[in-house]
Length: 355
Image (tube, rainbow, N blue to C red; front, top):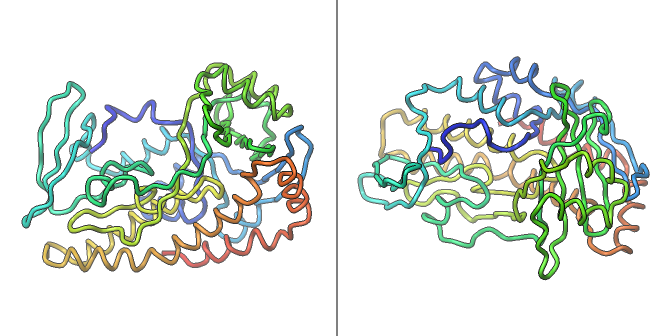
């Protein structure tokens, strides 16, 4: 069930690591993903003036695991995934309204684009509706996400401003921007983050450009090229729950365990969740009495890897999201001297583990 009528305007782009590609391999669309995506083989960090702090080559991940970090347009990935499902089972243009758990399953209330309301009963409801999950709020309680005090925006920027096959990050006090090459288009993805200040209201593209131009002069050409494509993404939040299932409602991806977007692992981890959940449900066949056991097994298998991915994100956050000027200078020094192995070690452990 999806509120949008189609996926043509759903976001900009996202990244997958080798563990995400492995899930696509199971679906038989890995080669299509390889053709549609852009392999990011170099990660650069720069200060607010654009001066290079450090380069991290990413080719070793590709050599070791067959795939490193790949950036792909959301609509291309949606097309691949939708092609794996029966079209009649995709219910578009239906917005979740609420649910009620009963002895015989879960009744879900929804409405279509005209506002007409209806309901359906299901044996199991899977909430995969992101960090601000309405399903989570209905089944587990509202307000379980923890806002971090940073806001994000997205936009398309001139591709020539981003090195080929690279991700470039600009770091300033209270500001962070990440640019991703796109080998298949004329525009590259720009993601802009700012620490929220009291009364902060930078919503229009012009206001966002002004906000960053004042503190990140190295982004001037990038911001100019973004023009009016800049869109508000979200106020960043994390989610850490004691349990991912409540009765016959279970969560996966950001709805269950959102973390900030510093390590590019969110989409890949959500795909792993879906694969493991599907395996555990397949193991019980038509035996509905064993659904609770399948959900417990799903959570048991996923907790360790999710915790590892969250730790990676938190460590990178220490260098990316810094508010004060003095702390920013100290973080820049740390980036220059940080041993590569410290950054790579946790990623290697995660990718070697598998699901």
